[in-house]
Image 1 (cartoon, rainbow, N blue to C red):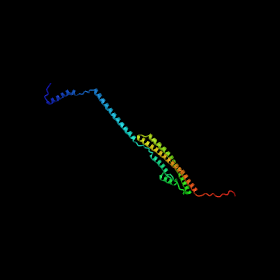
Image 2: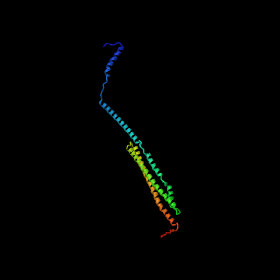
Image 3: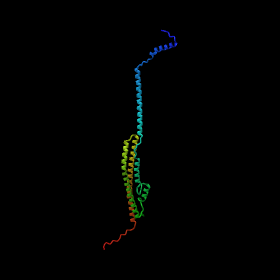
Image 4: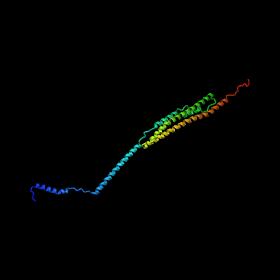
Length: 244
């Protein structure tokens, strides 16, 4: 082999020789490792399942929040104002009681004057006036009782409408709060009906009590009239001609 005397050319030649010698070593061979591949696949599957579990958990939390929102939703239907209006009308009818109202002061005063005992010095006209006044009081009490009954009967139409509305709202409730509020309003409706019933009983009881008081006072007045008649003096019968 001829010797190259130029150092530069010698260096280039050496580089080419070395490059040619190392070229096969730079080539990369792809090697498939089944165990490693299987392990990687299992790891990816586990990570995917973990992600799916997290997504499911988030979905459950979102549904729980939606359910809580439904449970906290307020009932859109309310009949409380209507119930209060019915009760107010019944109270107004009771307040319109004639003569002796539902007041202990008036009751005690009336029993001292119209229904209490009286003295022998009371004149016939005063006794008649007292009896007539008691009769008017009893008659007015029966009229008041009928008015209260008529008002309560008039409330029945409203009660039917309110009950239908509340039952429908309860059945269509989207959550626990709406169902509870519908139940509370149904209880309020029942309480209003009990209030109307108590008002009717109170009006009837007032009329019956005043009528009974009138009947209890009448014998006392009659006794005074009888005493006045007996103490008025000796009875002198008029002369009667039997024959003409």
